[in-house]
Length: 275
Image (cartoon, rainbow, N blue to C red; front, side, top):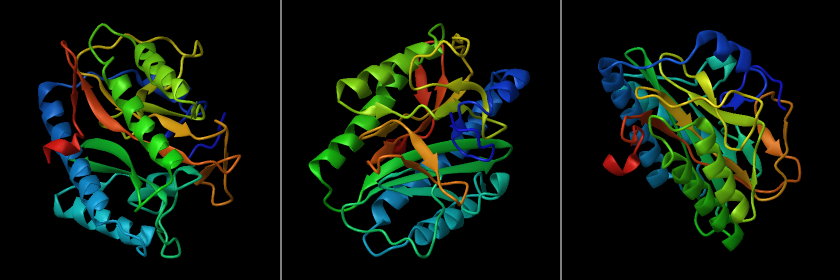
């Protein structure tokens, strides 16, 4: 398990005791309304980035756009300065799994599998979401990996409903990923989100007995974020102490939404289709 303490996606081992002490927050209707706004800002930025990205741009270009737009909409970037992270987005390319640092030296090329993760802090609450973008024409294998990653997110979201359990989400994601021949990264998990970027509970993408199987309650807000690798599920962290990569140099893809648990199901707060 990853034991670094300064990562933006939840490392499985580090944050469990912290989140257990804090407990799971149930948001009020007023708080949910604010989260809808913070999440809409995130969704807007990611939609814009998906439309403007092209070969020859750098990941620093995308980071500058994200920060500018988040601030224009009255929010602040959730990631910038978080445990010292220098960017407003995480930009991870190809074998980079999570937490890629935006850089003027990192040029985006045709065929890249680009993950862009960002968050916005608005009136005391965070929104958090990630997309994977196929830059130009990618290989059939890469296209399948991206498709299955997004499908697995929605397979998990379909299990969200008051009375269901976190392992319902985890099992649906794991089954879909493995049925398609890919591996689920186990070093990082989803998480609760709200007043803090990372809150209780851990939202696993695979079945485990290492954590209590929490029952979902209306008013919970969860960042569900399956991360898939084309090959081995194992990762390692580079010398920058942020960027996690696949140990076998295989491709990785990720999608994430901030999701509200309701009595009858769910609401995707970071839904880009409604922008």
